[in-house]
Image (cartoon, rainbow, N blue to C red; front, side, top):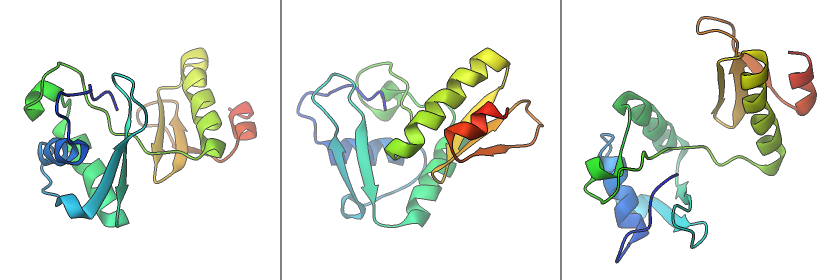
Length: 138
């Protein structure tokens, strides 16, 4: 997310370079990448061949800290985000969890392996959100 369009852009090469900057060498044949739309900062959807590679990418991304385009040898100061691709059924509960974060003082809504979680405090218990009704019980 938040990757600006580049002149002479070859999406798969750019994705390989960005992933390489978080410490993973990934061959172009191991994934497919495509822009979602022609918008300036359109998300890039990455389809990986196995879950282990996906999990490693998210782990290394978290360890790497803030990742900017200029640090990946591309123009722009945009911060690059890695997000999971949620189904439509999961998008709405996650959107609502982010709203609840602000309204009710929760700190951490997040998605891991397609599951939505929220946490009230840094050391509080993670609460699994399976459906919208689970948010009403918070």
